[in-house]
Length: 267
Image (tube, rainbow, N blue to C red; front, side, top):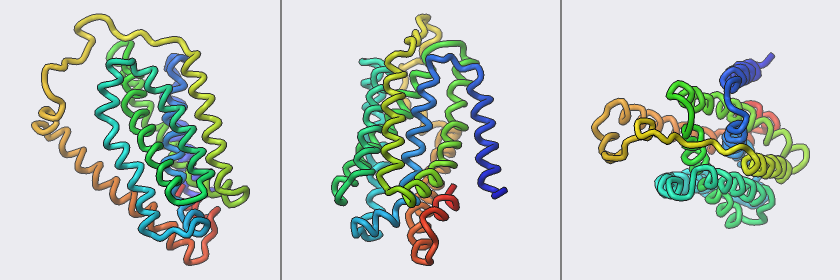
């Protein structure tokens, strides 16, 4: 069996074990994390298809990758503020709807501008999922339960990142670039409906269970090496991943590798 498939099986097993004790009302959040990571990783194998169909340059392909990341960066702080006022559950449902709309836009975009706008909308939704969605997971239960719930997002996202490129590449090569995004959009709509119908998770009511807001998180981040060092590593890893996802598929396509194979290689 190919190495990538063994890795995907291992990630899937870890995700299943992590989700065993999660309340059913919170399971749609993990579905949303999965779908968001699928959309995030789907662009890489489809870059050469977009370049051919919409006559895009490598600079324009780079802008597509940058647009989502930039809008994600801009939205995380406002989402935290509105999440406190409106409720993280409502914000998370809105994120699911935005993912569906952005997926349709990416699949049906007739030109670069609409495709770019769809990536911006996806970045907003992606940042919202990892802000309001994660906050919703931590709004009830003991500290141990909250830790397990938050930790489960990592293997779930890892599985989606592993299978996303192969799913998008193979399906787009066989049926067109709009098909994988249409499937993802339909799943996102179902998740939004499931979140609306799921039992509401009650936030903690005791003062001790609420996080302290007396100090600035930015001040705490600047004074803690345990925050600064991982942040730097994440930035470096993100840059490396973006460069690979942008230039790797384009060069592979120039060398005659099919979209199907590119998707599997990225997975």
